[in-house]
Length: 466
Ligand SMILES: O=P(O)(O)OC[C@@]1(O)O[C@H](CO)[C@@H](O)[C@@H]1O
Ligand SMILES: [Mn+2]
Image 1 (spheres, helix red, strand yellow):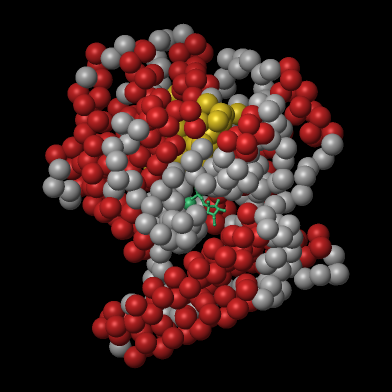
Image 2 (cartoon, protein in one colour):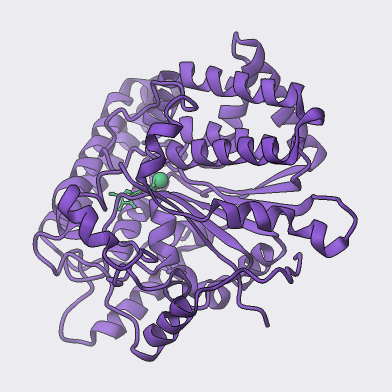
């Protein structure tokens, strides 16, 4: 990892607040125990809809399963639906969570996590949907969906969310074409760009990736959420909705190697992008990654996706490869050019794709160094880690009921593998690092500001110097 000697000015207040928060402990996890809370409404209303849609998708593919697998496909379809229907009943009647039985590589870790949750509750009450942490039960639901499908070969590799992810890509074609054209224009004049012009393009593409996160299907319970307009044109009008904007710190981190090496080289060795949603959002991330490499701001990009279908629209390896293939096959010069460039980045090892099981487990990120030390060590090799989306933000902050002015550093609780930045549109009621009075003002202007996806943060944190 690049050891950054550049001192980012941490306000004395922020440091004092961080100390204060540490001294006074960590707030409780968001959960459905608070009737009427966003967690409660998500678990009561939206998660059952997601299960119903998954059941409906499997049912609608019955004839496909028959064509491909004959009677075995039919009985697998029936069995998977029955497991998902049972899961939905457990969820809606707040039954105790059940151990996983599918013998996958992460099964043991999931069951151990459940024991950990149970020991925190003691023997009085079982780990259940409406009493355990929202982060845990929501992640658990998606892992049970995976179990229901995995236990039923020959449909055990079926992605119940695939239709929504591919539709989001196809419905966003105009925006994708505009974005790839914009990237092509930049790359044609890259050599002649001044430092200011470069940083301007960087900020625009960082914001396009930020707002790409609005296109997430779990918050819309699978409803179409694609990007219809040209993403560049809307940036100015969206600027006021960025509540925390640390993009200057991100720029400084990418360029800080120049100060260190005194060579005028401005290349950071490696930027990691912890991906969120497939579809349009993934294209915005690939375009940003292409810009970072072709501008010389980064030498290598490591992408982190999910090992199985997750939170309706999250990227799996299949989605990542499919998106690049689709871009290559587009009947559009700049899309096609971008797609081929992305494929050669992967072939040359300039881009690498990983999918560690930790990203599809329920852990708060402050547990990563203990629960996934190999992944933590991988992230420590990065000069910058970009975390996309709301669920990653919830895990960065532990999905705790923090006060809004608590410092981001305090909420990370020691998770600092490398300089990191969250690019997140707000879809859950956890947000730290705001100025005094800022949350109150937002609530008076727009009571659902934390969950409607209209607001965003570019929130940065550098590891404390050893
Ligand atoms: O991580 P993303 O894709 O930006 O958002 C996912 C997400 O908004 O969907 C859930 C709603 O069910 C939220 O709790 C969760 O954070
Ligand atoms: Mn997501």
